[in-house]
Every structure is written in C-alpha cells, then in structure tokens.
Length: 139
Image (cartoon, rainbow, N blue to C red; front, side, top):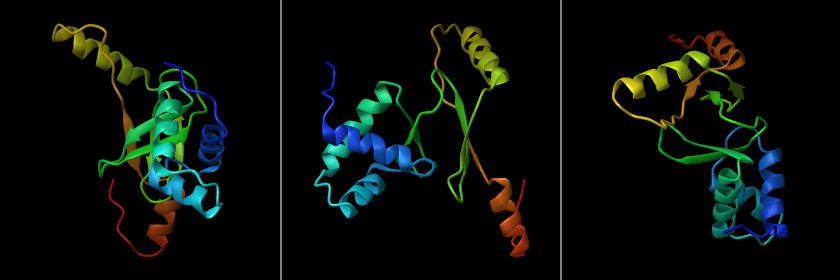
C-alpha cells in the first residue's frame, strides 16, 4: 500500500535532509516540535519508515539498539562509516564485504542472502580532538 504524500511527510523528509548524520525519530520530532509544526511522534515514525522502505532514507540500528535514519544520497546497496562522536557519515562501497557475504552464504547453503554492514569509529577530526585533549584513542 503506497503512502500518501502529505505535507507532514514532506516536512519530515525536509527535516531529515537538514539533519547532520543519522538521527532518531525522537530527535527529529524534537526539531519539528521546536518549529511548531504540530507533527506528532507517531507521524514521524510512520514517515521515516515509509522513506526507508522507499529507499529515500537509510536506516540502521545504533550500537545501543536505537533505530536511526538519514536522508539517502546514494541509490542502491551501500555501507556506512559513522563517527561515534560527531555523527559524520560516509557512504562507502565494500566489494570485499559483498564477495565475503555471498561466498559465506553459499558455503552454508543459503541463497538470496542480504546483509547490512555499518562501521562505527571516530573520524579524523574527532580523533585529533581527543588526542589534543590527551585522551587515549585505541585502534
């Protein structure tokens, strides 16, 4: 069933495009509430789910288990490098990961395998900032 393209959904899409990196539905809702849009949290969740299923938004689960969303700038299957500190996100291709996933699935008798790979770490700027503050940054 196709979702209607309402002004609320478009406003959620715009807010997501304006967000820095991946954001939670609650965070996006707080931004919209500050703007007095009148858009409810349930509407934000529905809009984000619809955008993700249509391929207009990336969705991932944070290391803490929270669903996060980001306006998708690349069509098709891709992976992300995500800074745990500032949220900087870089979309990457990972041909070695693709080959490994298909090879591993096939080895165990699986077909039509799908996978999600998101790498969380610290970007260069956050690594440098922590090093300058005297914090230990491990590899």
